[in-house]
Amino acid sequence: IAEVSMTTIEDKAPYKEVYLPGKVMADERRISELTARYPGRIEKLMVNFTGEYVNKGQVIASIYSPDLVIAQREFFEILKSGNPNSPLAKAARKKLKLWMLTDEQIQKMEENREIQTELDIFSHYNGYVSELKIAEGEHIMEGEVFFEIVNLDKVWVLFEAYENDLAWVMVGDKIDLEVKSVAGKIFNQKITFIDPFIDPQTRV
Image 1 (tube, rainbow, N blue to C red):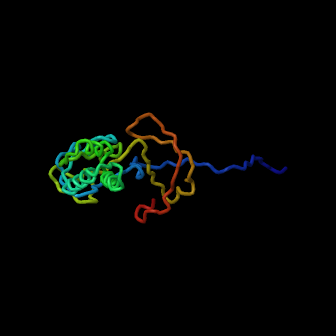
Image 2: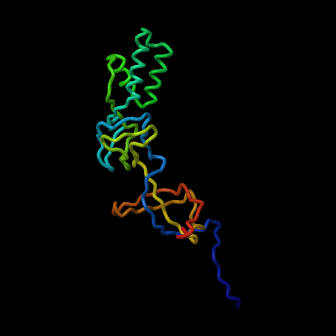
């Protein structure tokens, strides 16, 4: 008598649970820098430490700039011609706007026709200050970074997968994520990206 055992063969993808360590990181696409558009001196600083939250449109500093004083003077001379919509007037407004002045600031200049030696700088983003690169009284140059601001409304979680795990990890795979700082809660997400490079030291 032949001893034959039977088993069911299924046509499906292999399945395995892989446990990976990871850490929560800022989304690089949500990191922004506020950069000086003209040289000047920081007169007041309204944001005093890293980690402080700022809102878009919030005043974060005030600056004195000789270049900005000259630009205002030129703007007022152009407006004296009596045609606020002349090509020169439009070009002067555009220049001030490129220097991070808001429409409200430019309109106030037109109405008052008074040179402002100290002008407010506004945040263009919502987020936390991750780097504070200026101080009150400090001189800054054009192109120099004031602040680095990180929006944490959405974040990345970066996992470390060893070489022998990679065969079981694919873009689109389901992830059940536990975070120590949020005890008892499981986040259900999917893998959206796999780094094509392996760290030569850690082999992850």
